[in-house]
Image (cartoon, rainbow, N blue to C red; front, side):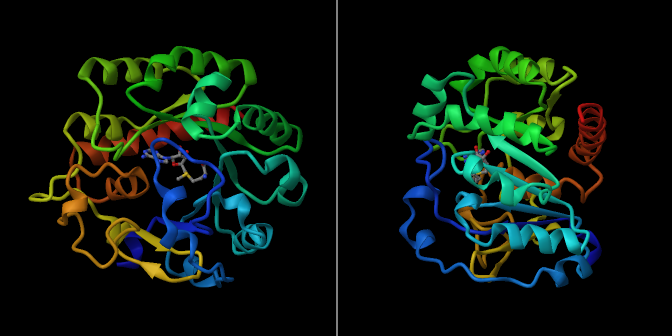
Length: 293
Ligand SMILES: C[S@@+](CC[C@H](N)C(=O)[O-])C[C@H]1O[C@@H](n2cnc3c(N)ncnc32)[C@H](O)[C@@H]1O
């Protein structure tokens, strides 16, 4: 089983200083109550984990984040850290050189749109963070969560990424209060922009959206085999954060699921079109990232 493990999603904190319109994490009191404790990362590497995805909540709220990243680095475990950027300026120095990649979330290419979407003022912090990260020699990118509303600003977001000279990762929204998915023509438009040099997308994800996500009768989810989920206190949940202890891909919460942190690694198992599209996208994205260093 371990040979199929790809990604560890480490929710270092489930506290958040944003109030995003498409994510309920910040309003979940049970999440906020979870203690944050040190966790020994050594077994992850031995278990075959190839990527440590540091997420939350807002990871920069976790005091010992630099230690966590330094340990992962010492074990040769590649890391991705995703942040809303609010605390980046004050923590940039202590984090410098520790994360493999830094993803700054940006939902709209304007302060008006992004700050509304996030429920707090943070557009300026993201732009300043991207600039600062580049000055410090980091490899930042913009992670754009596309909703039915924000997709209208895709051309402007591509322009902004080009102006800032950073890659742009297109992340279609999932579980958006029941309004999942995009019109077929919108998906074609996203695919059109995905051909741009700085734009990264996953074609398997876009086709999975078109197909309506996971089916509970014939689940495509392989979260249990391909991912490992760690909570802030070091507890492990399986198959995923949203379905702890449940049957993989078969519970009601799995109906139409498109939660990419779990679905993308799932596509690495099973030789269907999602497997091939995912493999192709991974190769193309890797080449684009290498070209944008
Ligand atoms: C859950 S956040 C945690 C890290 C950090 N607080 C941030 O905002 O970047 C990680 C990423 O997931 C995205 N995200 C949150 N809810 C989502 C949803 N319903 N669908 C798709 N992506 C989502 C966010 O936009 C962000 O880029």
